[in-house]
Amino acid sequence: MNLSMTTGEQVLTPRTRRERRAARTSRRLLESARHVFLERGLAGATIEEITERADLGKGTFYIYFSSKVAIFESVVASCLEELMAQVREVENSAADLRTALAKVVEAESAYRERDPGGFRLIVLARSLLLLNEAELPEVRSLFDRYFATLERIIRRYARAPMDPAYLRRVVIMLTNISSGYLSCTALGPAADEAGVAYTRVAEVMLDAVRDLVDSAQDQNAAPGGEVVSPSPTACLPEEPV
Image (cartoon, rainbow, N blue to C red):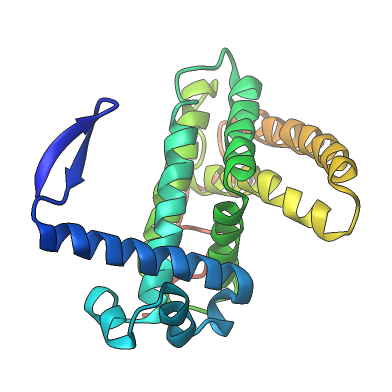
């Protein structure tokens, strides 16, 4: 593989004909899997359906991915990486905490509008982790990185240090604002009505998140005063020991 430069980033480019063919095959499988997972979810999807949609043999699938869960993780990881890149731009672009929180939600909303399918897959993966319905170590690690990014943004604009466990709960609430849009649309209103409802709910929740941060800083500790480090992706179930 050689490195080519595009838009200021280093991108791995297949060098040989075999590598280019392998890259095309991998992309076909990933694109096919994305469609199948959006239609059927993780539990309902099958490798046979993925390979049939990609017009490839089942044996070819196992050259690139070890299982259905493995390709699901690859698809979701790509979506999460894009979302994180968009949110990281917020870190140095706000004047105060409330503005920073709003910019995070705007960045998540922008990603949701640009790639609604990708956003749905992120929410699906998070739900599977919350319900402990699938082992997704790579996705779990990426969620932890994403939450850590949001924690860093909040600490940057906070007036005083915050208890880590309390901060993680605040971040979980913040990320629930954007996923709440899916709840609004699931209730059945037209898209414009859902958008109005979501905007109102988002403003209330943003104020609530800001107030939670301010309250914790005024007390200079989480409720109870005990500082406890959060487990990886707190509010997601821990992996079994």
